[in-house]
Image 1: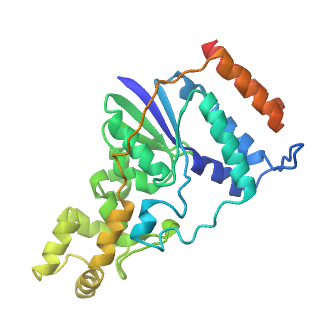
Image 2 (image 1 turned 135 degrees about the horizontal axis):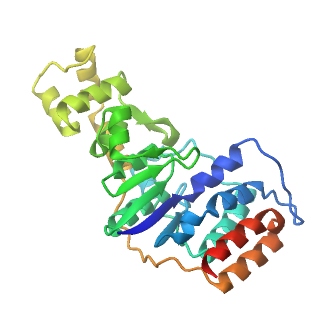
Image 3 (image 1 turned 30 degrees about the horizontal axis):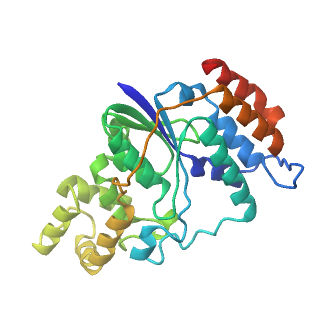
Length: 292
């Protein structure tokens, strides 16, 4: 089978941006260490020897379709500063000239682009590079996740071994417990253990609510209070499902990976212009050696 890498590149960048690290200021007065660190992470042979590598960017903070569903969605996130915009714009140019498919837009998030790619590339095995737990809903026999911070691999089997859940239950699980990183509020009194037990017993939210409506005693501690909380928060839970389920129908054009002499020359010139060629050059030369 063909093979593809699907990268949540904004998440990679922000990991370096917010982590303690050295400061590198270029001749134009911009901090560029997070950009350099992100590029070092990207310049791996595996991304250049696959049939396709996708770099998905998040550019929809405040404009994503999910904000029309819930104005509080990601309201805890600060808008990007000028130095972030400067570095991400450069990172996008680097990715485009590395031969990657670059996906970004104001309506959809990086996770939605990755989910759509996962569906479109049905004839590929796929590695999703992210640590976003939302993306675990995509795990399948042909899809694994690789944590972009520590390289831990998540598969369907790993997910079940670690959480007791199937990939098809991830959306319902997060709809019950919420997701603080996205400012999604869960059901009061329903924590990880309770949500897991309910889904293991009833399979999905429809099964849980059918049991509640039928007056069944839920197989969890504090069953009466949990049933009341579920009933009182049904609209919130259904909204959460819409916020957490990833879109898989974005119209996209996916081109095979291409790295040329012109690509290499451009990357060297851009690195020189930004002020990061010296620490990046060996990695660029190694990638060029694979193709040129």
